[in-house]
Image 1 (cartoon, rainbow, N blue to C red):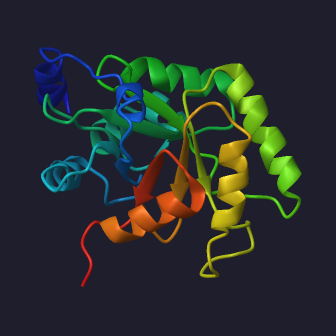
Image 2: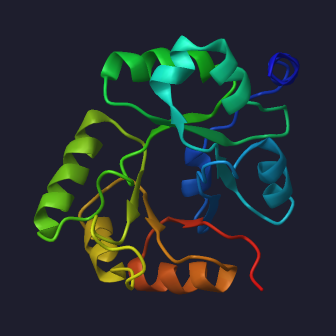
Length: 202
């Protein structure tokens, strides 16, 4: 990790919000555990991906262990804009992890999609998103399924309602595997960005 990070210090970080203000749909590579590492991010950027996430990193392990840091986070000067995603349940641990990577990343993401998706009472989800917006987050990614749902159809109508209730960018997530899927979801939801779990389709 050290060699790659030293090289990164020579490059200028990019503001991901510029992508959302461009007027174009932002194409995002999802934070896939074991997959969204540097080599994969380098590949998808060559195919038009605008913004990449790291795999989800457990913040407590990352802060505690140099071995975990070397294993979980590598980057280089071409790996931008880059969002580092952490899983954390304590605010201080998240802050400590963010401080470690902030010189080399363009943003920090807190994973809420795995433990918490849309609620059956959509008003509760809208309320949560509005509270997050009030704290100053830059954008929110919404996975359009409930916690109990796995392969059921995505509730794009719910994402649309959330988008219409917010003033910050909303990124749609769920069953977006091709650029055509991204275009369709944009028309259905009005969301500003689309997360793709698979860049290439058979």
